Amino acid sequence: MDPHRPLRLTLLLLAAGTPCFAQDFSRQVEAAAAGLLKGASWGFSVKDASTGSRLAQREAERNLVPASSLKLLPTAAAFAALGPEHRFKTRLYRLGPLEADGALRGGLALVGGGDPALGSSLVRGAQPLEELLAGWVRKLQDAGVRRVEGDLVADNRLHEGLPVPGSWSWEDIGNYYAAPADALSINDNLFRIVFAPGSPGDDARLLRLEPEVPGLELVNRMTTGPEGSGDNGFVFNSPGRFTAELRGTVPSGPKEFAIKGALPEPALFAAQALKARLEKAGVSVSGEARLAEAPVRREPSALLLETLSPPLKDIVFITHKRSFNLYAELLARALAVRRGRPGTVEEGLAAVKDHVRGLGVDVSGMRLFDACGLSRSNQLTADSLAGVLAAMSKAKAFGIYRDSLVVPGDPDATGHIKSFGKGLEGRLWTKSGSLAGVRSYAGYLKTRKGRLLAFAFIANNYVCAPAELDRLHERLLAALAAD
Image (tube, rainbow, N blue to C red; front, side, top):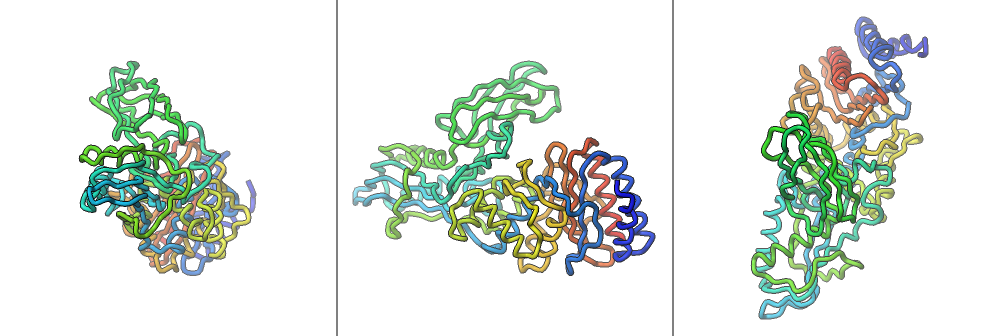
């Protein structure tokens, strides 16, 4: 440990508050570094949001794995490039003439516009899957379509390249939180796998999928764990592959218990689901549901319907509150498309990085491999993360951005962060990140005197209990707020 660090930290904090406050804060930091976080990499940066000046720091310029706090970057860039009221468009075109007898010759094309919330049950204002499909069928019937003579084609070619970043873990891919980012995403690109648990040690019987995924074969190796053990199930699969292996446990006790998997081909599923709903409603489809092999011709006169997403601000709300990986990945690709570049993960991350650079934040050591923070290859500094937050405090969309973060006791949040910051109600807004051995917290804090702070704390390779780390950072934030 650098013997001069405690003195430097104290002198830095003297500019922000009283000597007693600075000394107490310094003692807490050094005690944590020598005890709870001994052997870990721990960096933090606290800035005055109005000036961007650094008020407190420890290893603020050390590159660390940020986990889901990384989502603060693509969402900030999306607000700047697209605006909080931006809406994505999904369109359905006819591929031939509609005859007087109701025969639609040539088929249909469902064209994805990168909407993260299509068919979502999470985003305010979005239509859940069944409601969405029913509405599409009604509009086609109202347009006079009685039968479709041709294929139902899903065009997802707005985005290119790998649907998931190459650095994601095999254990993650196949699960809902690592769903592929597709220009024609639907139902949050997930499905539920419902089991009937037995007694501890018994096999867990597979009951059904919600919704059904045509062509998907499941190899069930799930067993039953102890009562109250929760979801410890994993879906081993990859995009485009229709044989998934289920391993792990579900808890004994409940009659049914569900885990969530990632749709292997979201766009194809969207076309299959629409075809099934049309046929159920008595509208026959002679062809098959399939993926487009080339971009579909989009004549304005052939447009049958258009579905608008909820405003971007409502999508970002869920991205932050629920730490929803898919939405962050799709927003990054939307930034690439906005710049006229291919909608790949690489181009999306380049757009995110360019936005951060444009804010005057140092990105020389920043390495981005995804937009959501699931990759352990991501690297950035606490200072750069706090710098983005400070810069955002001057943006027109700041109020919307800040209020999309988690507050103490937040009813819209899930996981450990929901109870984080008790006692700081009305003064703390946080985005957290968690991976094994990684814990991060970033956001805004209003002090007793009304000063707005932008902060980022990142811990890597710690071995203490995560709850202990939460309590440490709560104490540090409370000390900062009291000054």
